[in-house]
Image (cartoon, rainbow, N blue to C red; front, side, top):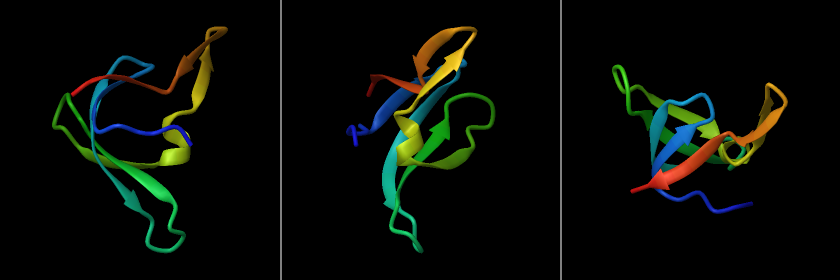
Length: 71
């Protein structure tokens, strides 16, 4: 799996998020990304690490789901 750095990312739909930790799922030990929204009320979220680096297709174009933009 591609390394997931701590820091800021832009989602392919345009919003920005900050990865604050990589955690383990308590039941499966699957790696989970802990991140917060850098807009609105700044909610805290988790997502399987396997999904973080996926590519998505939209309007016939392929994008990384999250693009690293720095610290």
